[in-house]
Image 1 (tube, helix red, strand yellow):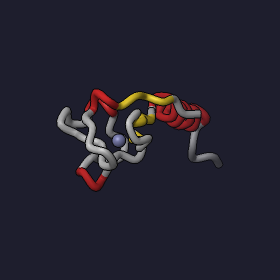
Image 2 (tube, helix red, strand yellow):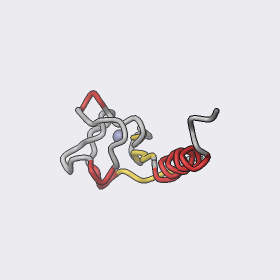
Image 3 (spheres, protein in one colour):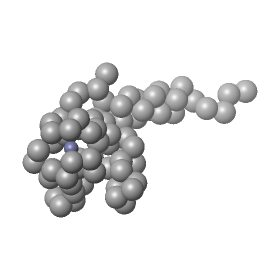
Length: 77
Ligand SMILES: [Zn+2]
């Protein structure tokens, strides 16, 4: 007897794919430090899964101290 329907399973797979498709990495163009949205930056109180647009405007690169405007997005995958 099956407890999990095919529909539920497909939905879970779809959600996973969408999450992977939307997660992005951002690279500091000054020093190369990378902000991974999937990991966040917990040293600075930024929870895993936090989109770059939700990172506070006063966030600065932990390596070189530049602000958000000096980061560039790099694609993953
Ligand atoms: Zn930097």
